[in-house]
Image (cartoon, rainbow, N blue to C red; front, side):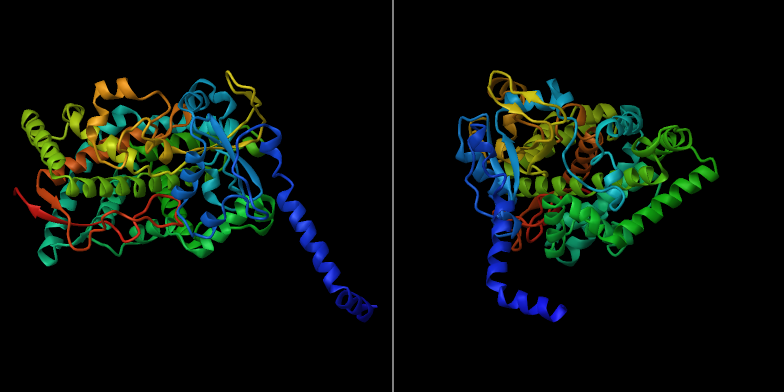
Length: 512
């Protein structure tokens, strides 16, 4: 019987191949008539790969892919494309974006990123949670980022900033070509460690620390990560069946162990500090220990630990990236650097050289410099959303179905000359009060997202960045060096905007 079957398959191999290819072709193209039938302008797909072949194979950066779609339909509110077999709706119109993120948020509460929480611990975090679970987590974790709690971090940030200054001094003596992203990442790791969890990590002084190593590992790209991400996007049920882990297991295990021990120690010893861990412990008390919910509404300790990890990571790597890009632009634009330094020094004198809330609030030009950095270097290239209810686009015939995946092209909008003339030029003057009110509609600037699902750590990140710039620029003049890439190029297979060859700069001390 078996030999007969083998012979049959061999004799009919060509026919079987044709049938398999036909079935695969049918499966891969079965969704490709959606945008045509709905009269949505769209990018014509190719079988199997849709419109994202070059991005999926790293032949082009996702910035180029999404920007190509965006620019193909000038004047349109939206357009369609296919992420392999999945129909995606790209929303281009600022007014519609503003409606989706704020006014009509109830129709778009979820990010639409399918990460199995049973396999990937990050799936339990605020970033990936959905529906009522997200609402509950947001409510319980928001107190960790109030103005009162953040004000208590100023002295901690100053100490870490002084360590960063010492590190720059030491490295500049050895060889004044410094890879800035690495040292700012260590700085940001130290800040979030002490602010959120009461941990003195000293990664600035120790480049080889486990925290530094595993934080970097979580943001690494690579072929294997790309394959796993593609499978998760295209075949989420298959990925769940395979129990596909999207993030390095050793890194997740490290952070899970550390933060599990922090929570356990603080609980058993009744230690109370006015920090993020205290907020997590309060959330654990209410959601885990006293929660009467069942099944998917029930919280467990892993939910708390998952959120501890994501908040640690979100408070380190993205902040370090923005600071490094900001210093890069200041090195290229000495007039802007000079003006910024003058504001910092004069404001420090007014406030007695102390890092106070009033000092931070008076750094208006610093705000403009950071806003322009976040415009030009949008850390997230796009925002993801999913329609959680059927939605009729205002003033339009389009009805967005429940479950529709949506992409908001942040980077493309931030580089659209309609809203930002000469978008490749670094110009903080775009963010004067007059310019903001004159040129730009709501929904054309959202580096931290917008609406109820905007980044929960926005205020902390802004203060952290302003304070470290104040400390560094009052001590050093920043310049380019032989290793500086002009213009910067970016790694094609990472989730965040990352410089391909690092950000190399030189520092000259101007004050003791």
